[in-house]
Length: 344
Image 1: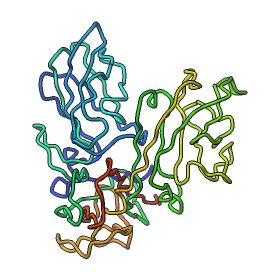
Image 2: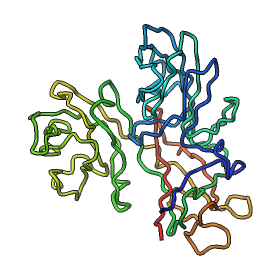
Image 3: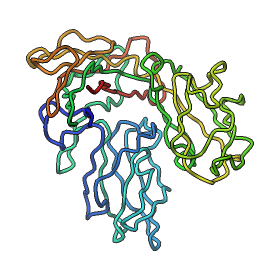
């Protein structure tokens, strides 16, 4: 089949409890059933979330989301979700697919970690969720394992820090399946810091029977007749209506959801963050970090050729966040850490 690379706390290599991308633990009663899914929608923010049911009316519940003080998803007190044991809720927190028990009731609570280490009891340790760091300082370096949980070797394995993204407002989970860095390593760091206002025009039924619309970014057309089918990738070079000359989603790719909801009156606001510029990686040398730098890092399993991680084994590295003295206080400085390898 293929290689499948996951990041785990080094002390928990080989153990799913060490997963740093996503973990959920029920705290009061059992509100979450099954294992939450990573939606790969591009809107998840690394943090520790405490989610509490505030109200229930039939299968509809209202959930409060508490997290870091700078996280724009903090204090989302009016999040409506479905608690029927089957429906995948896409906003608890955003970017995570969560199924709530039909028995879910007021006061029931759970924790979800994105980027943090969380043990079986819900106790968390900050790892890739760097939080608030004073300018001119750096976080304590942590040792991470990049483990291949697939069944084929990963070759040319490289660790990147990429621009992070998040949406303001509502309806993005209805209209957008994925928005994330460009699929090509030659373009996936190109997204500039800033705000993108996304709107839609010319809503109609396309030749495939799916709905289409023109996508506008900051008032200018970026994609002609984009298909809302949950699978078509639009990015520079995709050749399917994306305007390469304008390249208004520079460094990004977008997949629109499979929906018939008319987006003509909806405005989405996408923030591109700059935190990735200050993430530093260091090679692991017998359990100690080498020299830290804000550069891509080749990951290698001990005893293997450079960039190779075989199935059920890992390459190790160290990570920290270092802010320059000139860094001024700002909004959430999100970043994405990604390990990419080729399968033999």
